[in-house]
Length: 114
Ligand SMILES: [Zn+2]
Image (cartoon, rainbow, N blue to C red):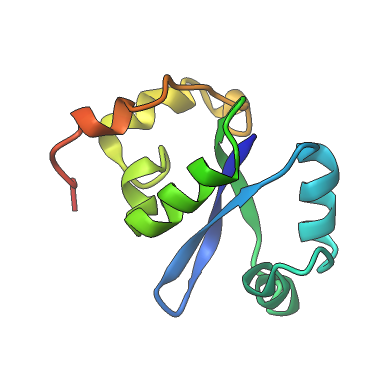
């Protein structure tokens, strides 16, 4: 699965991390403890910046991860940043709930709301 993390504070211009894992719980624990060989997440940990799981794409692979990274528009994919998909967060108690969206859905979004 491919996942999108939203940082509680921006790091320079970065506010998101996109990763691939087969075990999200384990991967998040690695990120939360500064391990896992993801340099950006190590820096986030060292600076004490928190993060939330913003999106998860189940069944997607590393090619999908690479494609999202190449798009360089994580804010548009993020329900915390993109008001047009903020409904994905439903209710506060579901903030960290993983939410799936069909592949290709972002092609239908033609406007970045900020
Ligand atoms: Zn975001």
